[in-house]
Amino acid sequence: MTTLKILALTACTAFLSSGSFSDSRCSNSTTADRAALIQSASLTPTVLTAKGNKIQVALLLDTSNSMDGLIDQAKSRLWNIVNTLTTLKYNGQASQIEIALYEYGNDGIRDENYIHQVTPLTQDLDLVSEKLFALRTNGGSEYCGAVIRDASNNLNWDGNEKSMKLIYIAGNEAFDQGKINYKEVISNTKSKNIYTNTIFCGSREEGIQTFWQNGATLGGGKYFNIDSDKRVIYIETPYDVRISECNTKLNDTYIYYGSHGSEYKLKQAAQDRNAEVQSVSNYVERTVAKSRKNAYNNDHWDLVDKAEKDASFISTVKDDALPSELKGKSKEEIKKAVAIKSAERGKIQKEIEELSRKRQEYIDTEMKKRGNPDSDDLGKAIEKSILEQAKASGYTSK
Image (cartoon, rainbow, N blue to C red):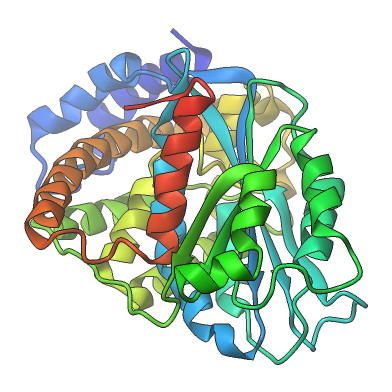
């Protein structure tokens, strides 16, 4: 039993007896449910993460004038992509998920090749979401070879041969534009075990003629074409409301710390709102992603995640780095507060996982009935290729 879980047991007992323990059920709770939380603190399984094993995905998006639809699809499918990645396991263990974001082909970018690294490879998915929603299109020249070279050379790609490293580049102009030879770039990228996938926004034949298929072939990846102006179709399910309610409870388990901790907490809520504006389904997908530790980890501002990563941190954290409700508290009191929130979070995450499984079964059934009408958008193209490449790399999908 981990130190954090032992603390959770002690803290839960103390707070239950005082009547101050908060209800962590997403639906109505009973005294029995609360008592069961003590048990769950020791029984909730920890997500096993393969040591040093990562799944890294770089999204390279064309933000020239005609690509508003592509950006909108990316906003709508970000959390679906993340959730696809979290289903993958290597030798039965989950891998750490990192996402990077690039934009290219925009006249507003101050770079000779119109390239901008929006985020590095990171687990800070709220940052990725924030920057994605801030993207704006503008006329420009799209140099695919240049942006792939930048992503290949300047991102912190993992050296573990078992890690899966993927580039997805999407756009609608000829793939061979610019001074940089895309063939040489992609060959060099593949030599690092980074696989390049291409998504052409237009007809399949035009993408082939303008070398998008060739780019994927050279990169050991997949070639897709999509209608970037097509509106993403969502399937609402009977489980969406309950999962959404869980999100509110989940957010309440975060305890910020540090000089910018409160800002990160506000950003979390802001990205919830961004997801909800896209659709109820997108908001639900984000909630599911937030329940998965190998993808959504905030140890840079959340005491619960930080304590799980470094059990000694609370003993050293300074009083002025804590939120007002913990200022002046003893180290033991802080540890108890963090342990209680950890136990609450584990219970909520378990409920979200169960609801998510039922939700996906419902969606799969509806998709079969409808004949996969939304199979050619950005998210579905990436989802399909991730699963295919994962299988080829020795990963399994639960």
